[in-house]
Image (cartoon, rainbow, N blue to C red; front, top):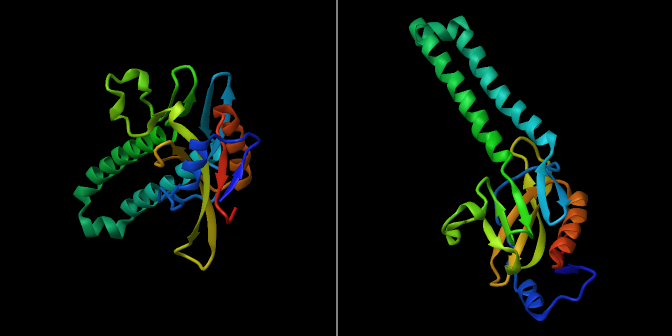
Length: 211
């Protein structure tokens, strides 16, 4: 484990960082930079890059495009019966609309560090809107964050022998638990933005040995 910070971490911080679990927190995989950090006064947040929306749209567009093409093919229509073609097209249109809505809502889900209310949260629901804040799964008070963790995980393609590495940015909390902030394929941008976020939160950044 390497510590990257210009500050001398406190004893509790050092203890948390030294005893941190270094196994990946998520199964999310990507080989490109997915978010950019924006710091605006007392609020820092990660914003999805345009490429993330384009890639997602192309992926699901290809899937539904092939589905509509198959339904328009005369041989397929004969197999399922012509009377089912229109209902299936309607179902596909509804499925496409719902899928795009759900995926884009998830992609646009805020990742926020706010010194104004003293919270970190992921999702559209700010802790300020919840009567029972202890029920929040992806939210934590900023003063409970002991450090930031960057770890790499190698992924192997199912269609070739190639592999790639993506990276997790996780919060290390005072009780040794962790919360995933995001997963990205861009190491350089993650290293730079993790340092910027560490300065914003006044906590150290630690990296796995393979980074």
